[in-house]
Length: 559
Ligand code: SF4
Image (cartoon, rainbow, N blue to C red; front, side):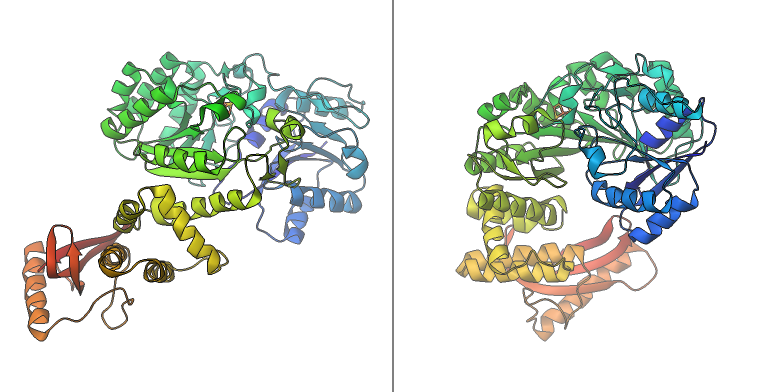
């Protein structure tokens, strides 16, 4: 019996962990299991052709919210092309279907929750020419769902997919799990269903990490839901990585409120660029935290994020979720400002999704939460949130990515925050302009983005404030893009007298001579009147020293 395990990634760089784990566990019962990792963006016909070409009798799909619609279309086509093939679906987006799903789609079995044990059971039965009997985690036509997310008593029972060479290590990013489950039960999260946390043994974790570090995988992304649930285990893994790492970077999702003094001390030793922490703040409104059963000390979280930000070189990414019950737009904007003030590198703002199987989705009717019934199940309205407020937050999140997380407009955003009094009010004001002018419709180049921002500034400000903001925008832009005199955006003042131009050339020449490097250096000069440290008419020559992987190296010469 030939089996195909397949999925569609949202981007090519994502390498599956689920499929190799399933193969590692099931290949004892069925020796012919192929893996096929595809990308959603490909035309459906191509995806279909690749799957059909695998010539399998059993085709198993791993279903997530980003691939569900396409996979269900593929399933319907496959059953017409290969009526005898058996189709199995598994994954978080399919684990909670009711019995009528089998009437709507030509599917032979659904794996609900953790997949290894039920898939092994199913394939063993089919391999032996028998009908499988129902077990937890395996849903067959005519039966109700039977979710179970802790089937493997010991995670070490799962043979290492890395040691077996089943994980594609060439994509630049590898997902790795050292534990399953989460000790918390936030009602909007699927992990709320599995409070029982299981860890692989430390020996197993170390041997897997050895292999990945030896291979110098550029980024190893731990998918553990709360990696640091056990401080001692956490420190042992961190220490092991610090002692053995060659050149990999590591991403962890952590609970910042759980960090203790010895762990923070250890984290001070992490070199720049090696660790990234993703920290869910989610909400700062006590009523909301209470309603979504999220028991986190915000005070400890804030103290520890500040400690990470000031004492370590770890890249910090914080998450906030809008649309949760217990608070509305005003509370959320306060949460944005509170979270931004913690000093992280990246702040992600998202609307809550009512994911299948989560307690919040089960309570949606009771809480009068309306949501899109199609993936990604985003909230549409609730008693605390009207659709237009949610849209405002969506816009604020997008602008936050473009203007703050991108790191391209630090001076402008700092000045705007002074003028408006906060980050949230600044973004909200830009969002109003963006909506009025239909600017969310297209993606735009950095120059076009800067010119739209200039349009916003000219429309909403005047006098010295406008001049100050435009100059901040001009300096930010000159640091991101090589500006060429004659075709520079309008927010640059290029009115230099002949004598000033001569002075600039002389100054740049002296600077370049001091650099002791070959080759021509390009520069661009502009007039400024509102520089914080040097008021009055001044000239800045932006000297483009080099272009590196992380951006332009630009030197400002002040005249
Ligand atoms: S949001 Fe985070 S802490 Fe809460 S249940 Fe999910 S994984 Fe656990």
